[in-house]
Amino acid sequence: MFTGIVQGVATVAAITDRPGLRSFELALPEGFDGGLALGASVACDGVCLTVTSRPQAGHASFDVMQQSLALTTLGALTPGSRLNVERAAKDGAEIGGHPLSGHVDCMGRVLSVRRPENNHVLRIEVPVSHRRYVFAKGYIAINGASLTVAEADRQAGWFEVWLIPETLRMTTFADKGVGAWLNIEIERGTQVVVDTVRDALDEKLGPLLPALEAMLVAHGGSVDDLASTIRLPKP
Image 1 (cartoon, rainbow, N blue to C red):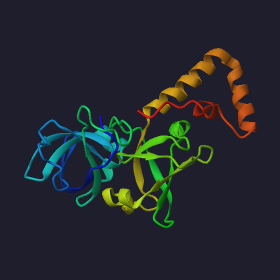
Image 2 (tube, helix red, strand yellow):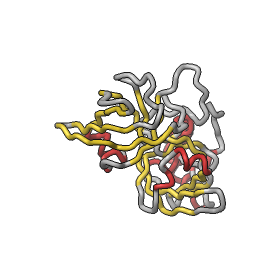
Image 3 (cartoon, rainbow, N blue to C red):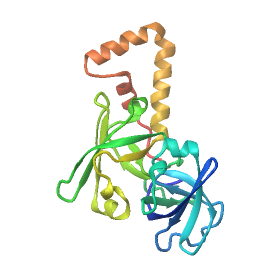
Image 4 (cartoon, one colour):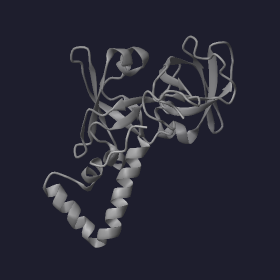
């Protein structure tokens, strides 16, 4: 498990392709590798990876399967690319963000970047398959960072996050321009609530559910808006 609090930025030092695998050697942030053992878990841009070797001090290597390369931004990395990294949380660790599994659900694309004073706002496109889980004031993980959704328009398919200077300093978000792809992990509590409400409505209403959905849409809402009124407490 991870907390969603990025601990620094790593740099891709080398890439090696083998049948069915791609190995990444990362140069880690100063002090990050203290006690880092083979088999340890590290979130790399939000993807949980396992340390497979320690080529030298301050470096660690990770093997990534083809499926992970295809479903995340890791497939586009090249030597010199920068990644957010976080080590696995220890028992009793403070959860400053929200619990993350390191299993990326989808990728989102940066639609726009705004820079009001002392803030940095990313508007991110989310795939149709996962729009129902994104609500204003809800939690979401972007490239391994636990963030709060500031605004969301599920009909248009985007949401916004506001980043403070400290977040920009500790992460790679300042590097992300329009068109950049980001890894998204949906907050699991939100996913459970939305899916449960949908399943319950489907079970109770059956063939009437499409009529309810049509009525809600006609009034500017959706079944997912019903779920958004049910919030789980922050873990």
